[in-house]
Structure formats: structure tokens, C-alpha cells
Image 1: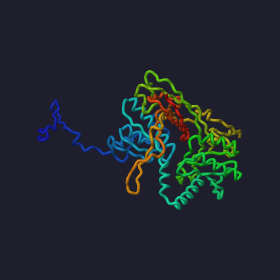
Image 2: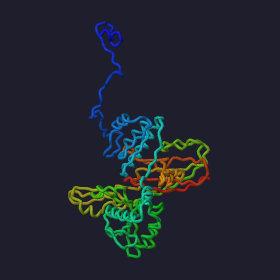
Image 3: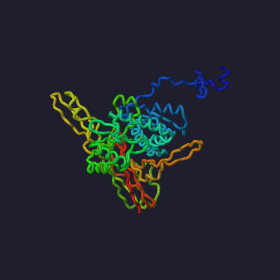
Image 4: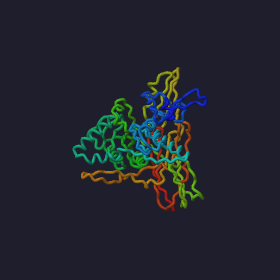
Length: 454
């Protein structure tokens, strides 16, 4: 005791009646966190943090994990990102991040969430990083096929066609030119694995349909050439009397469980219409909260441009409306997508059926839209290693879309802006402006506008 007193570790109270021992944090062993983290609360149903994703985790949980396992500036990766909690927390904690997911809805939810994080950091005066949304597999498919022998490519093509036709629930057809299968009253053509479906391919398919006497064809593809719909589709319908339906091949086709359960849905290609207005430059750049990052950092604009979303047309059909109504029981209801409308069908207890159209106008389909005002300025490159081990950067022929401006719905705010804030251009020239819409199903639709700045 005397020894501790002499070292200053024992303190006598002012009255001299009690002693206390000093405790220093550096000497304390502490209590380790148990493997049951019951102090991390669930997300409240009314919390702004909740995004409506079924497997969403609390940010407090990921914050504890990231702080315990990394330092600022480190790279965090989540390869099944879901609602994007890991990426959102990593951004707030000044970590770099990579987030991936096979689910279209997961990517869309994560994108909106991270834009929200950017806005929060910007309002609080903190730095934030721009991020890119990359569709991995688009160019990897092409480079993968180039490395296969001709026989391997033929075998892969047969496997690929069988996989897609099975997921689409179509029967294989032999000896029908470029046509691959049939489903109901339509023939089916599966687009290539490595490149978009082009106008040339569509006209080849239509020519085979005319030759063989088919009047309806479904063309399936991962991507479609810009401007293909609705112009070409209308032309062939008028000139050749062939009804063409373009449908996206979803990534879910590679998920055997989803295919076996019948959960894979092929959605029709949508069409959007946007316009632009070239304005004389304002005296001072307008502050626009929806710009991310804010491009209004300079002066001396030659002109300013706004983009307006005018229309969005879709022909989504998920189930046969008449078949759903025929199976409906008294007192029950169902929601069906049919011909570009979301319809609620119901039957009351007396057996009277009713249809209610839930999508009152095209606005109801839009969940998010954004604009890149200089699309050609950001070339997409990949690093390719040759047989000698040398690595070089190659341009894929595509460009990286940057969300310069965006407007989207949240659970708390369902409103949308349909005209962008002005975006200034400092140099004369012709600019390609990319407009991207993500609908309520998480499907992307794009349009390119050509803007001339004098």
C-alpha cells in the first residue's frame, strides 16, 4: 500500500477518511465484445435509413465491422452488396469501396443510396468521391469468346442458346435460319452473347419470318443498338407485317435456382423521349443540389443547357391478364403487368371482377433518371494482358456514364423533377448528352441527344 501511495497510484480523499486507486486506460485490459452483438439495434420501421430492401443490415453493424478491420483510405469490397449498406458506410468513414451484385434491383437501390450519401456529405461540407456504375460482363464476354477455338465457340453457342431458351420457356427449332425456337404463337431469336442486337440482325430475322410465314417474333438480347426501338420495329411492322417484340435477357438466367423456380422475367425494351434547351449563360453559375459532382465551378460559359424528360413508353407484360382473372378466387386480388400498364384485378365476395389501372400516366413508371452532359469525355478502358505477360490499356468502344445530374424517388419523398438544372459549357462544339431512366422494375433505358454549342 505504501509503495502504491509513493507512486501516486493511491489517492487520499480530502477528508482523509478514504482511499481510492487511480486507473489508467493504458493499463486497463477492458472487456472484449462478445460474439453476440445484441447492442446493435434493428432499423426502425420509420427510420430514414430504411430503404425497403429485404436483407438490409443496420449501418451501425457495418460501421463496427469496418472500423475494427480497416483504416481510412483502405479499400472495402462487398460482392453481394444488396441494399448497399457496406458501400454507404465505407463512404461515410472515408474508405474506398467496390460493391457488386447480380440483382438489378440491388444495384439500383445501392446507386440511389450512394447518391443520397453524397448529398449528405456535401451539405455538411465534407468531401466525397464520384463513383462509376460498370456493367461487368459486357466486354468480358467478347474477350472470352475470342480465346476459344472454333469448335469450343460452337459448343458454347449451343449451350448458350439452350440456356436462354429454357429460361424463356421456349421450344428449340431446327432448320429455321436465324430463328432458334418457338413460344406460343411466336418464334424466338436469341441475340448474340458478345455484342448488342443490331438493326441488321433484326432485318435478317424479319426476312426469315417472312420466308417461313411467321407473323410474330420475340428477339431476346442482353443489349440493343441505340435507336432500334421503336423506329425499326414500326418500319418492319408496316412493310413486312411482322410483329417484333424486343426483350432483355436478364442476368437471372445464369442463376439455375431462379430458372428452376420460374422467377426469371424477360422484360420488353422501353423507349424514352427527352428534349434539350440551349440557354444564354446566366450571370453567375446556378447552384444545383442535384449535380454530383457540381460542374458549376467555372465562369465564362458560352451557353447553358437544360434537359427535360418528355415521355416514357413501355410494353411490359408479365403474365396473361385473362388467365390471372380466370384463376382468381372470390375475395382475392392480384397485380399484373400487361401491355405497359400495372393493373390490379380483384374479385369481391359476390364474384364480381374489377380492374384498376395503377399506372395512371408515364410518370408512374419512373423511379430515377439522370443525365451525363458530356458522355464522350469519359472513355471506358480495360487492362488486357497478352501472351507475353505485357499489360496494355484498351478502349472498349464504350463510354463511362457519369451521373452529373439526377432526380429520384425515395420512400419519404415520391416527387420527381422533370427538367434539369442548367449545365454550363465553356467551349464551343458538339456534345453528346446521355439521358438514362431507371424504371420501377430497375431496368435501364437510355437516349442520346446531340447538343451544339456555338
